[in-house]
Image 1 (cartoon, rainbow, N blue to C red):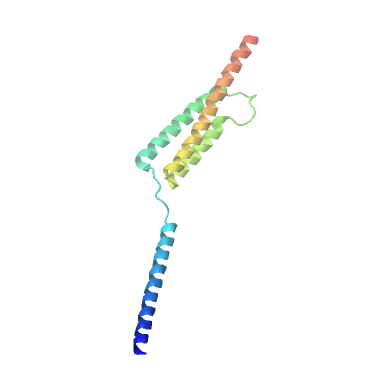
Image 2 (tube, helix red, strand yellow; image 1 turned 30 degrees about the vertical axis):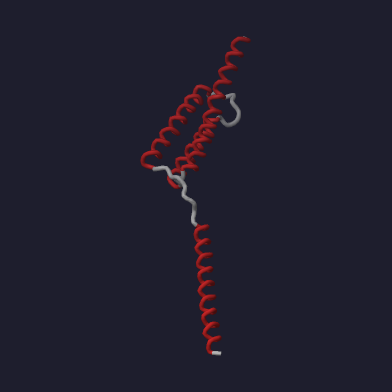
Length: 135
């Protein structure tokens, strides 16, 4: 009976060890799952400044187009106004969130508005040429 007690105690200690080990392993798996994946960041002192400069240059080009096309007859929102707001939002975002993916999305939206701005100027120029040839 003494031998059975020793084996039983030994089994209990092993079971406790394995249960503790399994719980620790599961906890580590949980903790690793909660850890955010590495995300590439933009260095604000170098790349961030360059991004701001590029965004400002794009904004200034569109502003020139906006001034050239200014008309009292124009209805709606000019692409420059949307671009200006997006640049402001992105510059603010750059102060808080330096993830590369976030700033790439910002740049993509800015470029989309800039293309809209330049296509609007081309369509306005084409309309002026067509309008001029009809008069």
